[in-house]
Length: 458
Image (cartoon, rainbow, N blue to C red; front, side, top):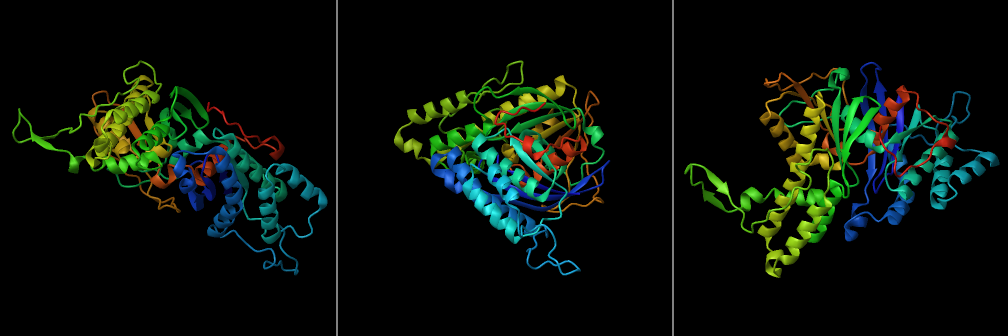
């Protein structure tokens, strides 16, 4: 089975083709996963500008589709592929009926440039050999969502392919079934998925920060979420305050890495053989809602604390490399502390078997490392699952690797995190989510597919 998947929930235009083999224990080949990024365009604002992102999606969708099909080996020119009887193989537009053109025009009535591009594409290329189309319908930025939704509807109508609406948050969780990775293990496939549930998923990105109870595929319950800014948004805004670049998460993480090499060192008073890193500028930021009894987050106060600290400094300190290193390290650590504590609390309270990471912020190396350290410190018996798939190919014969530690309570905790190139928005994760929705027969007529910016999971 092959799925063509389309993602336009924010500022990345993603198109992928994935192949699925096996049903009880499916494994996935990513035949292509093309992402057209708008980072350079939005950099000067320090965040995504929705109307501009919408316009860029209109420009990027057709070229990204073409590249994805080409990489998957599914792009054929309608003029060069002939059947045995000398007729061109179906799929190219040829002499398209006025009725079909009219319907395509109605679907893309608000996207004139996209309409022109898709007509050119359909005139030139045959229908690809895929079984269905999966598309993100929400949550996300509504102007951006509609570009992908209408593009997918047009292809579904013209090619006569079934279409699956996909929840963007669920896709971030299920990206782990494409490829997953964890520090300290060899890479191995996720098999026997029934042993992973119930699970708690931490989905953390520029637009979302949620802790979700996952009872099984398609069975979700939101336990907690941010009450204001998402963690990734906090990274972006604090990085903008410090003037260190966009997107903020990678920029802050890169600078924070210099902490140990740049921080002054002092001898420990109680142990002369142990040296301690000291803070030159005394930066200490709050950990909002760290000790509340719920699973919610709040990061707007952290952003405000960074702004107040920065404004209180003289100009020479604001430009001091060590100040920026110290501040970056503290911002990152404040966010990590809250994310880990809340997630571990949910894992214990619900007696879960697996912690699943997803979303762009889950690519943060320090977050992954400290999650592992926290689990070890809690003395939980844990098994770290991952996959040994290279970026665009998997094998059903991969061997599983595990790391186990005996715990006081005899529990087993699995920790899943996607490969870093699958953490940010991409089409491949939409494809895998589309597959699991297809198993539950969630196919809809293309006429009923709509974008929902506030779509909830569960």
